Image (cartoon, rainbow, N blue to C red):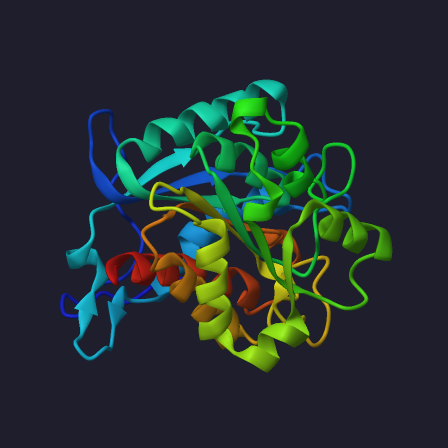
Length: 301
């Protein structure tokens, strides 16, 4: 579909390529993981789909005051990691994110399934982790169901994240097992279920998440946004989404509020299968809006 052009209505996306020596406020990086997914997925097609969806939107916040994110921030695109599921690809992802983190305030990784969280958080030298997710991701092995466990147990000792600095928001009924709930409790992970989130409200939960994951001023927090935390009607392109999840506006508000804290140095968007989306592309469009909400949070710092 060809989009109209209006000099007075600049679009989001289409940001310049990140080049060696550049400095930026935010850098996008495609990490199209998919080969170890527990369910069949075409998530490797998603980074390109998100980039294609971004120009459907402006980069303007209504405020007040009105803010043009394209003018307020230096935003760049670092392209994609090739074959990120391989051992070589994992190493390359860690190295590339480390390089970008040294040059930008926020690295936004476009997944891919949730396995990208492991190398992206490691590359950003994260000391804390906040997840928006219906699931614990504490499984054994290497898959999209294991990145949180791997960050606690499999990373080199000096890079492991202390589980007491992990906050998981949106954990849902009928989407997990009692055994993994017990593992999270035994490790001291702070679990905020979907019911608790709705009972307490977003602002209170965001404040607690920042406090736990960013326990000191030197903390570096990675934000994992698993889009399947949203209601299935909003995200039919997420294989594991369930009816009754977060409304699209709740997910967007959470993403913006969490990213507004300067201790968030990296983020990922995961579990969107662009090849399984509805005809109107609503899942990919929500993922693209989450990118813009991350930028909005960054601009609000």
